[in-house]
Length: 129
Image 1 (cartoon, rainbow, N blue to C red):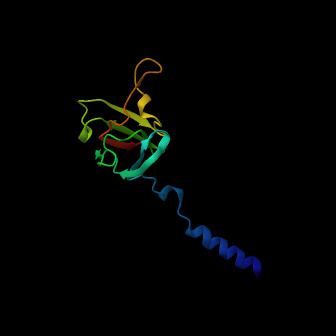
Image 2: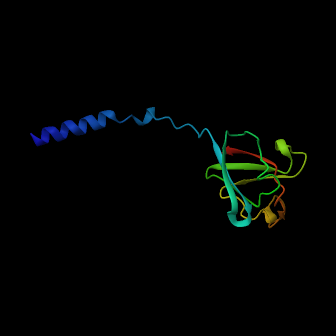
Image 3: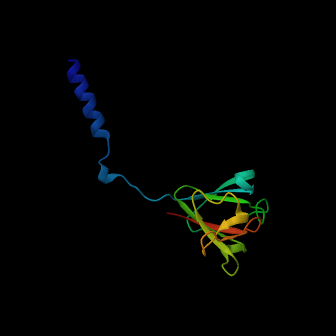
């Protein structure tokens, strides 16, 4: 009797599980970034979520005040000196874990090349990798 009850319970559990072919694995609907006004992700910090590729203007509490920036794991972000994600001035891109000291932001160029983006950011957008 106990064996019949156990088999019936297992059958019900297996029947409720969705087949692997029916599982929906869409990419995340949002991306996130962690921004801080002091180096090494200290001081005043916020985590902001946005839609992928949505240009996010930095509010007055962060505009030209960011010293560390880190996209969420699985995200990649572009950061802009100008508002509205305008590429006519300096910008850079970075993936997770980000840059803990924007005064020495790694940039394209010879090995070890850096630029100072500390306290200069005004907008950004992120995408999922």
